[in-house]
Every structure is written in C-alpha cells, then in structure tokens.
Image 1 (spheres, rainbow, N blue to C red):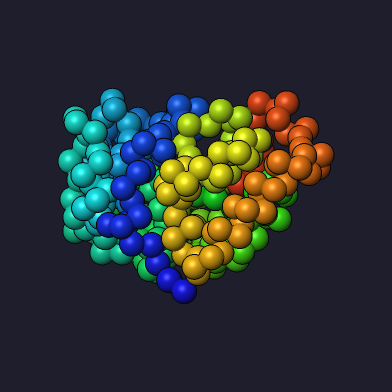
Image 2 (spheres, rainbow, N blue to C red):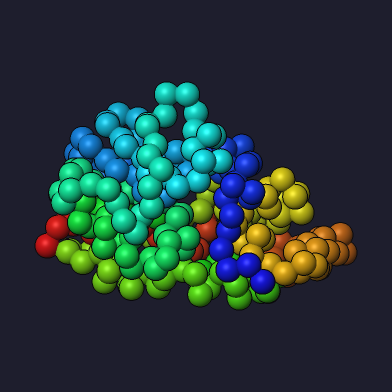
Length: 250
C-alpha cells in the first residue's frame, strides 16, 4: 500500500481539474490582508495565488511546476519542511490543500510561521465534516486519508501566534475538483479524469478504487443515492470540511 503520492506520476491533470474557485480565492485574498509579498508553499499549479502582489512559489514536483500557466509566479524546487529563506522574509505565507503531503506537517507549518512577518493562511480540510454520503461511499479511501490530515486545532498550535479557524462553504458549482466539491454532483466522481486530480485514489491498493466507483455507480443508477441524499441537489452551498487556519504574529 503506497504511503505517499508520487506527483511526477499522478499530478499531470491538476491544471485542468483543480481550477481555483473564485469564492474561495476571494476569502483567501481577504485573509492575506495588505501583504505585498507572499510565499506560496506546496504551490502546485498555482491555484489561489494572488495576482495583485508579488508571489514566490515553492513546489518540489517538476510535473506540477510544468503545469503552471504563463505569467504565473516563479516556482522554486524546494520543500516546505526546509524553506531556503531567512526569518521574516515575506509579508505573508500561503499553503493551499498541501499540508497533508508534508512529512511531518508540523515541520512545514513551523517554517511558514518562521518566514512570514505577517499572516500565514493554510487552506485545508476537516474530513470529519464531509457530507455523510462521502463517509459511506468513500470509506476505504477516507481511512487512508484521515491519518494524513492534521486536526485543524493541531495546525493552529503548530503555527503559533494569534490563530483562528475560518469555515468556508463549498459552492454547488465549485470549480476546484477536490472530492467534496461534488457533494451534490456525485456523478462526477465516476469520471476517471476527475479522480486523477484527487490524491486519495493514488494511495489505495489495487482494486479498491474500482470497488468504490462501482458501488457509487450502482447507487446512482438504481436511485438509491437520490433516495437518501437527493435533497442536496437543490442546495447552492454546503457547510462541510473546508477550513482556513489563519495565524498572525503573536
């Protein structure tokens, strides 16, 4: 059973399917305040990087760096756990849907706080608050994911300073293709291209992904999913697992 995701192999479709959602982006921008220089760590293809200030990205995967769009911030080949910058080098630091790939997450979080003079903003998930049907249908995958995701309170403790936790709604038409984005569009998870931009599937033993997908497909075809969860289709947002952990200097 793999214990980490090889983004050189599994990161090739992120630019297409993990497009930043503008509502999430607006809240992240708000939390960055008036910072003029921002370090984006675990930056991937550049989602949620502000366009109105200087940004420097850190991303260890060449495959992910190659998908950054023309004009994106420069990206260094470095790791969150050992950032090659002096203390207080940036006005702010940002980490979006990445800390569960750090080993250990606490090392990278401490580094974020070290290099930022001002706010550190971490976009992550509290998996216990996923929609109930995902706890059911994705159970085998979530069993692999939960140990990788630090508790949001633990993230705040590791960052230190003055911290707060912000809950974000997941829009019904969320453009960022993490699996909760499809809380009322379960059919999307049947698409292998959509799943290819979600790291959970790369952690599963052979055959497990096929079993999960087959069970969900059968429930949708039979009407079982809609019978139990169809009321979600009428909603325009879901108060689920999305969190921003924000640290200001103490």
